[in-house]
Length: 240
Image (tube, rainbow, N blue to C red; front, side):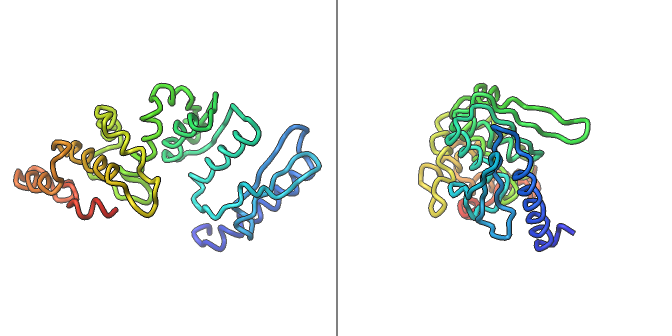
């Protein structure tokens, strides 16, 4: 049923309308609730407190991807209400990859990430993860997640995310360029493109300055790699 976009939109509107009624009638003193992104007016965001509600203009957005939109809400509440403790519930690994970065950038002191299903539910203390990773890796982690393959980008066959993480950590000189990945949606800076190329070359056994095309030819000549495990030609890689 929810595979139909119209049914999904109607379900979201129904739930938010019902929650609106509950918020108006039963919020406890000191509690606040924000509802957004599910009304028929997709831009609408509403803030509720005991006996009061108003439009939350700061949260009105046409951003459709819930996995990243929730961090806009986290950033807003930490800034507007000086919140230092956050609990986030999600089963998606791409959400987990973004948590350390926002833990640091939003000044969150305690960030609890609840994940898993059934009897495998657990809490991950993202403030400890962020401290362990350090600022550079924490900020690069969402970029590595997207670069190595996610819902909207292709995966590198045979190269798991742990290898990307290990290789990036071993080459801190690449982190400056990687941190800028995605900062400009229209154009990728030369430093960022070079860092991405170098990291991909290293993952396939080449040097940071070696062309992906030459690595592709060398691996093909050895006949030890199937076609799907060869690196993509640089022209394709740089355009993704």
